Image (cartoon, rainbow, N blue to C red; front, side, top):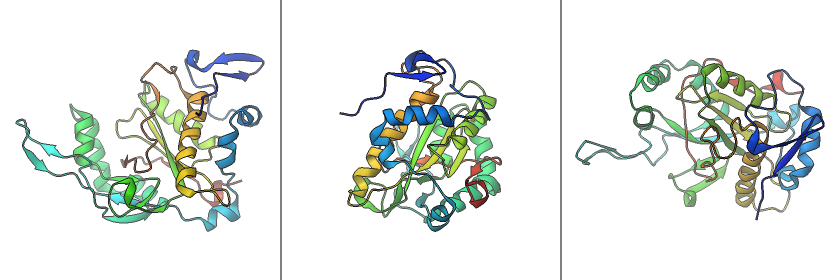
Length: 265
């Protein structure tokens, strides 16, 4: 049974992650010494984490399935089905194509405005926004129909207090020297952040099992370092993204962060 580390050491202080009220780091602060301390307490996570280098990153093409809306069935007030959920992908996209859609697609920008101005944002995003499966390519939206793993896992931080806090969290995750996401963007509601984090499969290991374990340990790591309000609050890491077929809504973010050759050390 995997366990989340119950405490961490930071600047000679022991801090229970359940009592942390704000992110442990500020944008621009060097986290490397602390990361080097905390990572040995996550040995399974160390096994899968990727240290992106120029040569490796340029050889890797991260691909995922793209689906048109809606993600769930649309029904009227009487419960009658109006529109079935889309479960067959429209296409396969690279992470670069996802980035360009997020930052430059006018239609997606308008849909994002509609979602953020809706009275029921949850229903609006489910019915309006396209989505992807960051973990891989699927012929049908079910784990049994996985055709190719992407080499990415999704991290989702929700229910932040302000849009400015979401912007800061986007940069914090992107700059994390252990996670090194290839893509970070603000979520549809404007108060969360989504990150696509690369992982590696050790030689001889089962890729699907490695992907599932990588998701678990990446979430444990992010929750320990970045959970702003503690384990009992809705604010923080969304734990529901452990399934390989987990979907991720796309929305407009002109300032989304993409890790390219110029941003890889």
